[in-house]
Length: 344
Image 1 (cartoon, rainbow, N blue to C red):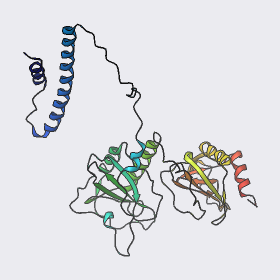
Image 2: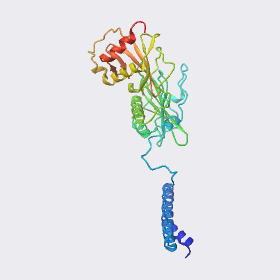
Image 3: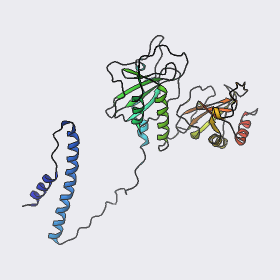
Image 4: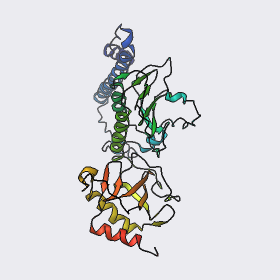
């Protein structure tokens, strides 16, 4: 038997037959391909050993010096968090008309399709917010499961006449397609999922914020995101994802038109104090009695991720992230007093 015949027979014996089930054909082909690769390596290794014996020589194998050394697994490729499919255009309200993306779309499923590879938080109807520039690419299935686990509901009828942001979650898929879910954090707080409605849009919003913050702990923002030229005391739009620990630039506002840039060393003092002295509004010393406060100051900031933040002055300090209140400690209060002094 020639060496060529021996190799062919060894490969043929090692490759398993694909199962007959059609739905498993792709998996079988993958297993067969892996088996062929293993069989080829094993057979070629056997042929090399035979050649060594016949020739009476020893073969020494050395790794290519240009090959990278094996190391720990790489962190998430940060570029993919920015390269995901973009948000759909923000809605332009027309009196008496609703944007098609924010109402049921017949012909679509009433659940988010599985296997999404990314999801972005985008602007929807309602008040505006600062849309994060990075997409969620880790644990996307967590958001899919949260939405699909919500109770299906009927079309909303009578809703509270409050006001708040509307948002969209745009899911991206490997084939380039997208699936948009729309939610309102006001009114009946319904969620539009394809052709149907689901209850409690707050759940999906909070889930996205939590998981994206977790992803950022092992990712890196784009260079230059933490510095902007247009920090203004007139700003009213803030990011729901931003956290004070990421603040890199800020202005202290004594009013809507007067802003004092906060030097980096003083900003570090304030950010460190925020970490120590921030708590929920119910635990920040408020007695529940309505107070008239003279504190009309605020801090407008940007984070290393490019998120905008607004820390609004309150009776006991500054309101942060909705129900969080920062009550400055002595060192931070000294910095704030200096920033608010006349002539600054």
